[in-house]
Amino acid sequence: MYKIQTLNKISKKGLGVLKSDKYEVSDECQSPDGIILRSFKMHDMELPDSLKAVARAGAGVNNIPIDKCSEKGIVVFNTPGANANAVKELVICALLLSSRKVVQGINWAKTLKDEGDQAGALVEKGKSNFVGPEIEGKTLGVVGLGAIGVQVANAAHHLGMDVIGYDPYLSVDSAWNLTRFAEKAENLDDLLAKCDYITIHVPALPSTKGMFDSEAFSKMKKGARLLNFSRDTLVDTGDVIDALNDGTVSCYITDFATAELLNHDKVICMPHLGASTPESEENCAVMASKEIKDFLENGNINNSVNYPTCDMGAKTGERITVAHKNIPNILHKITVIISGKDNLNIDHMLNKSRGDYAYTMYDVSDKIDPKVKKEIESLDGVIKVRIL
Image (cartoon, rainbow, N blue to C red):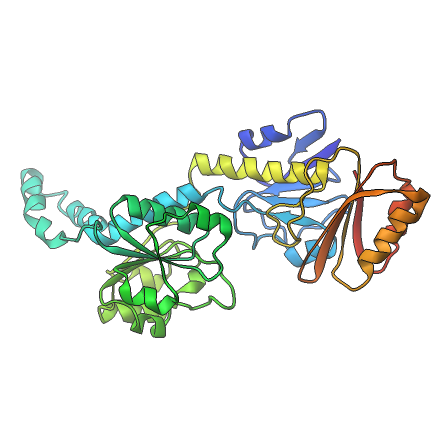
């Protein structure tokens, strides 16, 4: 019986993945094998020795003590792409709002609510103040072609836009899904110079902090519209305000509000609504539950943020999994213990590393002596061993 603790309200559809005689799911269970959460802050939480995996029903994991989990051999999962469609729809909405001055028009119309019978005529008379261009035939630059960026690019193409994409780390899966009509930018400067609209979809890393600063704005097409639904640190607030003031950027829309941005008439700030749909919450919960289920039952790792992807499919016999430090000779020592004990035959082995940590899986055809687990655990650099 696996015990799963929920630290937030999780979609019933998602938790339905774990409904069987193998699982006990509760928000108060003791000694959990796994934790599923959304925004609960785990940094001050004592991690129980029983804990093997944490699954975040969402993409961001800044509420989880990643380093602490890694040191204890606790695999942390997230759900990339599960809310991609919801974010894509919000970005397309923002794309239109950046052009047509709909928000400004609505806000102005509300100021006429006390004009009585004249309100309708006054609203109609003032519409010329809110003229904005159509997006069809314009060029959209998509910076970052992950799950969300690809969907935005494809949707913009179907709306009649020309699309230029930039992503030096484009994955094979993203390339397969991206419309063949998207043009590839060789560098960011090339994209900035050509695009009427730019939308950002890259992670927050030291290398991407402030990537949209005064230097980037100086290379941008005059009057471009900028959308940031990715991370607040990607755009330098002071520099984007300067670019708005001198007309380099004609509109900036983001879901990362600051007092400075809220006070600017060329900025539209909205709450962080990208994943705020019932469909998205269900998708994230289902994906998180499947990830934790596959790991607990089969030892497979997919979509982890701290350990490498390592998948040998469903186990058919005995399987040993080892989370360990990525250091020389440790793999040889583990393998010697397994193969040397009672002449166990290793049918299949898979080893992957990620930074300072590694993960190894072994399928063996015979019953495994519990002493094997203890011997492996005694090795320097071994963090957690499981026999499935």
